[in-house]
Length: 66
Length: 254
Image 1 (tube, helix red, strand yellow):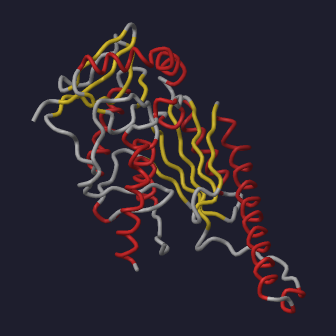
Image 2 (image 1 turned 90 degrees about the vertical axis):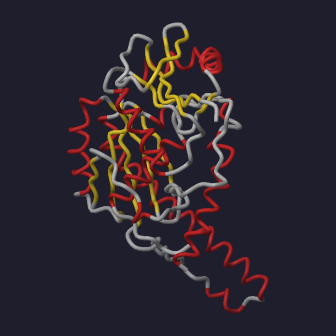
Image 3 (image 1 turned 45 degrees about the horizontal axis):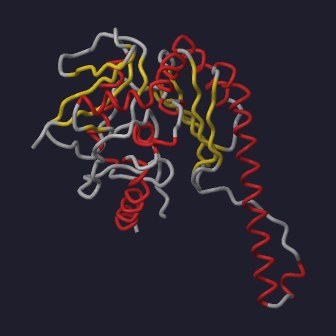
């Protein structure tokens, strides 16, 4: 995979996506979301990535980086 | 199209809701916070952001557990059944995690993954092709081990300083080739400022990585994981989705 520069804002969003999609309370539901028509989402810090330039900035999320 | 119930959080049943757009499905002393949607939510970044905004709004009103994005039920009865099936674990997690937050810390190798030098065996050059292959494999394993050791050293330094402010920590070593360490620290909100200051201290150590901190987040990474996770949205399709998107991005950047 090509190297993709990760900026702080991107990492924040990826961090959120990784958490909300892969973690959190799991309840077995009646319906599973189809990803066949997925309009584009991530993929986490494992696989990277999405069209970052389209991603909105999460609200009130602080990032520190060096 | 029929209405569905998207679940955002697990709360105590007395917790007020932040908006009338949400509803509660109670079971004993806990409840699921649900939103009614007329159709299945598309898997988009905006949808995930909206999910997070709702979770955070709920948590501003009281203790709450974040539910994984994409948890959808046909009706309230099904939600209540799911709560009943997981009640003991949910109640315990709500008590343990409801008022906590997590901070994310990621250590990225600066530039490309560092080149770990392995002493070349002079005999390799005189060996047959088959033996050279074995030499190369040994060198590869040695490089991986060396990289792993460097990542673990970084993780230990992070844990030594930042762990003081947390009462639980989850760490992944070398989750990708770009990332040395990825950690989540569980702490009380009152310690967030101190955690941030400690993070500045870690930065001053001059580690061979770029350090990034995010948060505070709802404690997604610390809820109990159960066997029932098998077959849910993310578990079942995530790898497929990841591969699809990775292929797309490779095409875009290649």
